[in-house]
Structure formats: structure tokens, C-alpha cells
Length: 136
Image (cartoon, rainbow, N blue to C red; front, side, top):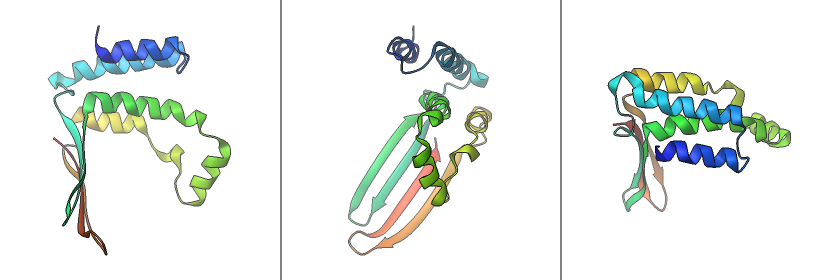
């Protein structure tokens, strides 16, 4: 049994997710392993943040794990207190507008390959800061 499946079963046992939510996650793991012959655990979402003074962040997340995380995020929205949701909405963040299923579908179809975000900005202390998010 895969590590991902064991973690999901442990989350069910600990009461972190319901049995139904666990089944959805297990299905997502199975789907990700069959996704059009692409091994999503060999492909990564990569986030790089660098400044003129050096690397600030270098994050690599396997796409298979990202798919599971999207499923968890979708379920986890119900646990965000209403007050916190209202505060986020005041700042223009509407979590209900995030379609996690669509994000997963885009990953499966390969539509999200390549560079997703490429930002450069200046900072007094760090100089030029570059942020890159891409699928590799």
C-alpha cells in the first residue's frame, strides 16, 4: 500500500477526515496514479524565490501530492471560521471561487505545464526579487 494511502487511512482513524472524505482522497490517489500514463510523483510544482542576495525559497511539491492537497483544501474550507472567511472576503479573497476540481483537471490534462507565475520586484534590503512558479 502506498504512503499516501496509509496517511489517508491514518487521518480517518484520527478523525481528521470523515470516512466519506477519506474515500474521496483514496480515489484521488488512484486517479493520480492512472492519469494518462503520467507519473505525477515524477513531476513537480516548483516555487523559486531569489534575490540578488541569494535564494530565499526553493520548494518542490510532487504533483501527485498536490492533487491530494487540493482535495484536502476543498474539504478544509468548511473548517475555516466564518469570521476569518469574512476578513478574507474584505481583503478580496473569496475561497468559494477556487475550483479545486478544475485545478486538478488542468494538472491531469497537462494544461498547467510550464511557467505559471513569473514576477520581479525591487526590495530595499534584498534588491531585485524574482518569484517563479512552474510545473516541471
